[in-house]
Length: 356
Image 1 (cartoon, rainbow, N blue to C red):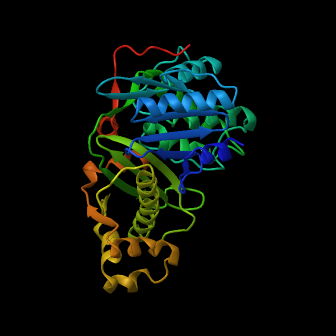
Image 2 (tube, helix red, strand yellow; image 1 turned 45 degrees about the vertical axis):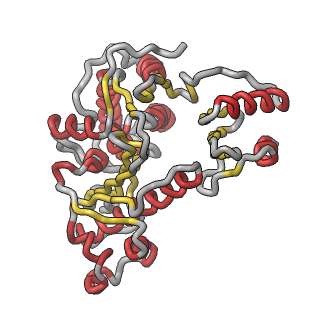
């Protein structure tokens, strides 16, 4: 019903995300609306458009106007002249209290550098429901904490039959969260938006199936806006192959993100730069001479080569030391972890009001 009403009043549904709507007027003013079930947030470049929209919505539906957004689906927002902070301090505090970890000793990283988890790890089997409840909460915290993306994805693989050792690593993540609730993602105000992607992978990082992971993140300005760490569906035969597959996954995200940005009225510079720290994975995408080395790779991953050929994507070599996606790929030493966390755009602010 609300979908039909929005489109009847001049909104266009975003083809890349069906919960996103855009409306423009004759003067070029823009109104962007995000719909989630019966909750919505919207932003506009014209106060008149915003006021008119509120009026017609409250006339048609029983709605509550909460004014300037400060809390939405567990995510807290602080808006200022310089930009926007988002965080989940209230959710994190409730989560730690629920599982009796509010007084735990903080640690500086969410995972130790030497770790090899398996399904058949030593230790007694745990209640899967209890383990899933903890991990599910951790997964929701990833909405504003990309620094725990890798380790939460790792422990998520053992939700069906968790063991005591798996719970120990989950408890360490909770201790890390205890010490980092004051961290936020800060999005500065920019007149021109530029998106840069980073992709990386671990070769055979899964000890059970020997599959690698595809990890990528995308920056708007100096802050990460999209991140992912996901196990690949194939077994890679080389580091070149697993990096190539990871890059292909990243390019799919690049296309999706650029489509959304274009559909809501932003003009992006093309090609979009994707940074990779493996030259041997870049070469097959640029030069068909290298085709012999990748004939066995599934054809769907050669979407990467197609996008590079159309000049929609530009692959660039990036040093491993500065590869931001590395934080989504593997356990890191404290100094490297902190450096990459800072590069993600995670900042500390002294006073964060907790939503009530």
